[in-house]
Length: 150
Image (cartoon, helix red, strand yellow):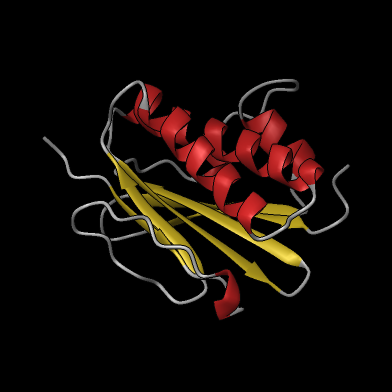
């Protein structure tokens, strides 16, 4: 059984939150979590991110948009790749950066963006997004502007 790990520390240490799961690893200024390739994992990732953003007093619109984007990317990892995945979220200046890494190999050019669902939702909500290869597969990254999502 895969071990799920996650932790968060925001840039401001007064908002530091630790989730006491076994094997938790701390990444300064970031929410970092690993999930198994299981149907419930995207929902768990979505709730973890939303809770962490609320704890940092992020606007409800940003929390909702980030949770939706993360859910789409995590669902793609499980549904289309059949892969465990990791997430990373950082608040940097006026931008929330999200990343989902899985064991897939697709490039952004090969990813189909359809309006109203999947990557179309990501494309509509993100200020920018892209895909880059990693040693294990690919990383899909998204930038959401703080305060611009209502």
